[in-house]
Length: 63
Image 1 (spheres, one colour):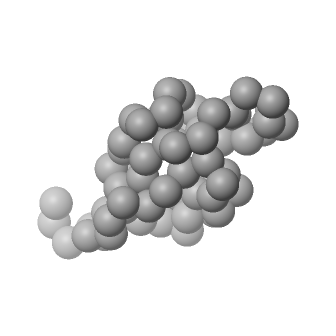
Image 2 (cartoon, rainbow, N blue to C red):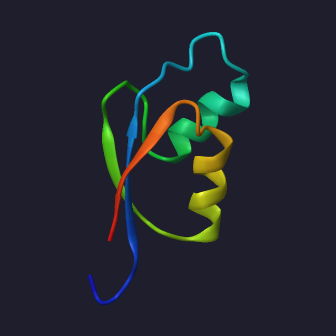
Image 3 (cartoon, rainbow, N blue to C red):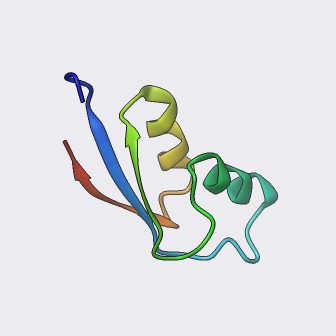
């Protein structure tokens, strides 16, 4: 992809019992079930979302 940095994330935790905004952040990242993976463009906005739910996701790789 023409030089853009990418980051792959996987959801490892459940949003059940978490604040509503954390559940919405997962949905914004394209995650809604455990063990789902998404490849996203590595932007400050995406990094901030990952930071907000860092206890529910894991960064698999950065390209």
